[in-house]
Image (tube, rainbow over all chains, first blue to last red; front, top):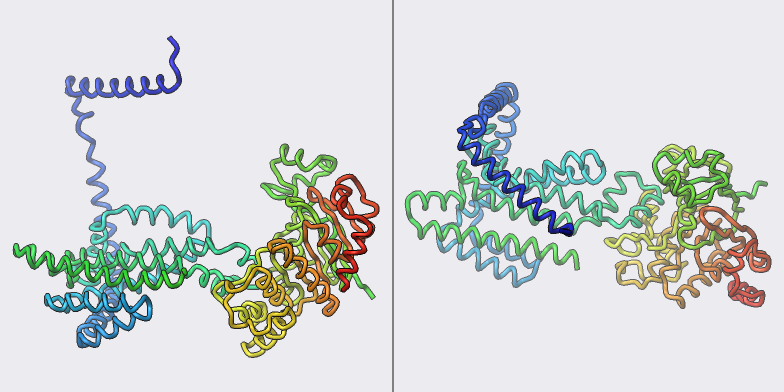
Length: 315
Length: 283
């Protein structure tokens, strides 16, 4: 009998599966326990060594984390106090003008309506707290992310190192980011900000890298031919031409920061996320749903404004 | 007085891993495709030598893949040659370090690109002043110079416009103005008019010829179009497979082609057409 290639491949796969199933039965029938239970000794060692290294880090570099923690707390505190201090009509007018200038007056009106809804359900203050966390986290993400993106676009080794790390960061479930924050800074706002930055920074790095790599080679060549040094090339040609892509990255970073800053309520961040958690804990579903919607409204407001900026730049 | 401005001696450019192995004398008689199949190297420039006089318009002509673009990029070291020397004012630019190279690019040479290479986020005047800005010249004075250059290329009053509001021909005028603004001794023109409509191309060619009579820059002009080569060039080098196969004034190229390849190129152009072209160019 003559078999074509596809048929024989399929037959091969089927017989392989059958053999594996038969072996599984065999192992269970013969009660080969060492093949049924996974050897677990390794993991206890691993946990111990991670525990030890964290302890070591805290003992030896605690001052460093304290320093960061103090400064972040101060910055966040100021931001928060300021946002809560500004009377609500002033904030609304400012947001309206911002949205009008950046996107359109329609977006501006929409933002005001959204903010009004937030205020009516008595969530103005938690909203401002969430926004404060988000602003600080986004600022840190941009300050760290754009230079890393530039580095990745210029240096192949840096790019090769960063790529798998960013892949891992983007596939990890968001709760995982709470862990390093708590370990290094304990419960509270600073851990929340660290988690938010870790979660939100990848698109900023990625799209800065991509944007700079995508700059038209002929323009870069022209820049070089007039004797630009590397810094001039970067600041006068590559970054300005990559701005639309970089802004798309920052937009994603902002949205992810919002998502994470609500999840970070679990480590005591405060804000809208905390409202949801508290209401759920007390079985007050109505309040939880309203706080959930407030997060959605805030997300829409922020997205419309930053998307409007990108659209205007790229047209 | 030495009136040789650029002298290129035995220039090679080979792309690939370990390019110098193709320089071995044992490969001297092999063709480009033989070298490619044996060593997996691409010979873009093969033992190219020529010199350009001060104020001359030197045309390098060839089909795509003939190495002409590589050659012009070697002249400002956007591509580093594999071996050979390039003397500009008797100084070997292939030996320049980064700083010397930057000074050389800032002061002596400017290039005009086929795809224009303009900055879309800047207006016309800031594009024109780009080379001066790189040199660190103050805004007022660089804008004044750029304004003059825009007038020279027929773009007066367009300074505040955005680049994408301009037609292709006008964009290339900005490209030329940008190159002229740094007052270079040498202009490299890499197929500057190839991306333009035929009608505009002819007009730009004419304008360039009359501009050149005014400014007398040493010019290396790359093209794949014989009409263009004949009308702008004082001398023409014809390239094929990385080598110069004939070099001489337009009349010589047309009247006594060195081989069948050149003859095929020049077939469409008779002696009369040559006179016509040249008188049209000098109008």
